[in-house]
Image (cartoon, rainbow over the protein chains, first blue to last red):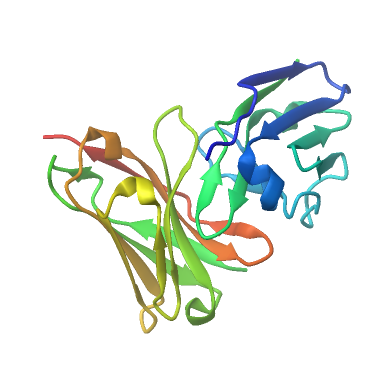
Amino acid sequence: YELTQPPSVSVSPGQTARITCSGDAVTSQYVYWYHQKPGQAPLLAIYRDSERPSGIPERYSASNSGTAATLTISGAQADDEGDYYCVSAGSSVLFGGGTKLTVL
Amino acid sequence: QVQLQESGPGLVQPSGTLSLTCTVSGGSISSDYWSWIRQSAGKAPEWVGRIYGGGGTNYNPSLKGRVTMSVDTSKKQFSLKVTSVTAADSAVYFCAREDRVRLFDFWGQGTLVTVSA
């Protein structure tokens, strides 16, 4: 099993960034999204396909169509830069390859 | 608020055993799942395995039987051992709480382990 993400996404400040995640696990398991900045542990951004934890800005949203999951950041800001990983979890846990988001 | 702190040697000899401990504060180690996740430089994180506070375990099949996890509830600690290590096992190792709804919601800061002679 693999989770496939685009290696990089680049947007200007205020634009919408979309990061996709595809793979067999997306069709049958919940997808989670993590945001990691250099030198830090990953931070949970989205859980169970589309739920946003407290403290995560409202501009973060996500969906899972059954064939691909998508993380959307509406009105991206400089603080949103970093690496984003999709994750699926069952008896085993699988991380996607990661997407580097650049906002400039 | 749950807090986790990894500890252990930062340098391990090739073919040796990597041993790390994670100390938990602010939560109940007995009633939760706890995972180890590692991340090689410039790569995506890789799930190593999980242990339940009651002692059940699941390991990443890719590590082919080299991994053992244990828990000591009296010390509020859980541990990781990886045997027969090579340079490919060099990584930052994170411990994390694995919540049934939110998955990895609390993480340690991570500890760098280098496999080298």
